[in-house]
Length: 190
Image 1 (cartoon, rainbow, N blue to C red):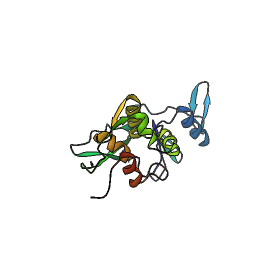
Image 2 (cartoon, one colour):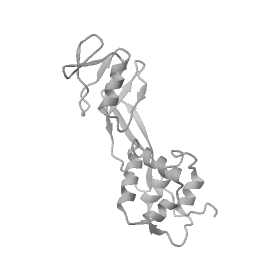
Image 3 (cartoon, rainbow, N blue to C red):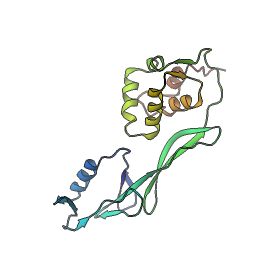
Image 4 (tube, one colour):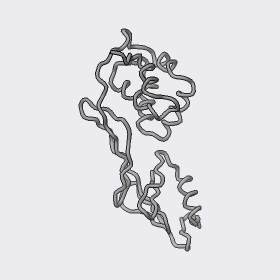
């Protein structure tokens, strides 16, 4: 995974699953070419992409390419992953998890255990399609999606399920806190 950085040091783009072909297309726009299987810069100079390990950057006129290191999400007790941020360092971009307070036990419907299919039926078709697409570029959604698909039964009161559904707030079209509560069967009234 690579990040594009402009001359002012701003992160232009950090796709989660950026393929080599997309990167090469961006380099082509910058005037780079492939010659005899090797990458050449706008002036014909030989270029090498940064290693997966953060050891070097590729610098072109107006553009630096840095490797991206995704830090593991290990929320402290009582917290959950609520997002992620990209932090530009000298030799790499770190994708860091953002933690927030985990929801406390609120009023949950009496039966919180259901099949994965029953949980999916609580989402609209548009929400499911958007979540599936988001899973391609967001590691947190991807992990949540993989865990759901691997389960046969889901407990809506289980903290990873709660945090996974709440993480989707604002990331799916029209999916706000009220929709998350509806999917989880949580009453916001006390």
